Amino acid sequence: MRDTGMENYVYGPAQRGLHWFMAAIIIIAIAVGLYAADLPKGDPSKGFLFLIHKSLGMTVLILAAPRILLRIFKGAPPYRFPIDRLTQLGAAAGHAALYVLMIAVPIGGYVMTCAEDHPVPWFGVFSFPRLVAPDKALAEITEDAHVVGAWILIAVIVVHVLAAIWHHRFKKDEVMARMAPRLATKSLKNSG
Ligand code: HEM
Ligand code: HEM
Image (cartoon, rainbow, N blue to C red; front, side, top):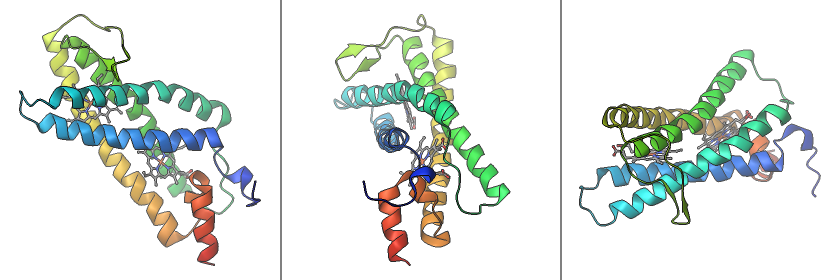
């Protein structure tokens, strides 16, 4: 492995792998969810798009378990550059919100779908068990919670991504390198 001198200051490969894989599926799940929710009721692609949406969302829920366990037991690498207390607190609050939402939003979707008496398939391979009996009132509450939760998640992700870009492009510190060591060390070196 190329020695970047940063091994102790970056997230490990499992944490990085989960971060980027889950970031991709969360963003695709959001895009598919927003697009499919807007289609008229009888649209032929609606069912297929929701199968993909639910499958991606349940994958997020499952992967959140090892991810959070890794975070608890392995922790986050220390910052090797000065970073003020307020920025650290803001980042910690934002990350905590992302962890809560990456569990709460798919659970809301799962409960809502069961309460609506619809199946929760995983890419047509198998179906998740029914969590609750059909219940119209519960379906309505969890639908609102799922949609509002998803919009809060979208807002936090936008702030998170803008913060990462700001650190990388303007502050030129090593925050991005902690999660993307190859990409970031290269451009940090190039920028001298
Ligand atoms: C990370 C996970 C998830 C995210 C970020 C997410 C996000 C979204 C978004 C943005 C919408 C569109 C909201 C709207 O504009 O109406 C939506 C709708 C929906 N989602 Fe999810 N979702 C996730 C997981 C799930 C799961 C696991 C299920 C079911 C098992 C699910 C079922 C649904 C359903 C049925 C709708 C349609 C609701 C409606 O149109 O009223 N979602 N989701
Ligand atoms: C696609 C654009 C994204 C970029 C450029 C990005 C970048 C980063 C960077 C640089 C860090 C390290 C921050 C630090 O240690 O100070 C980080 C951490 C984190 N990211 Fe992202 N991220 C992206 C998308 C997402 C998405 C969609 C989620 C959704 C949940 C997410 C969740 C997290 C969480 C929870 C952490 C905290 C890791 C920890 O310390 O436990 N990221 N991200």
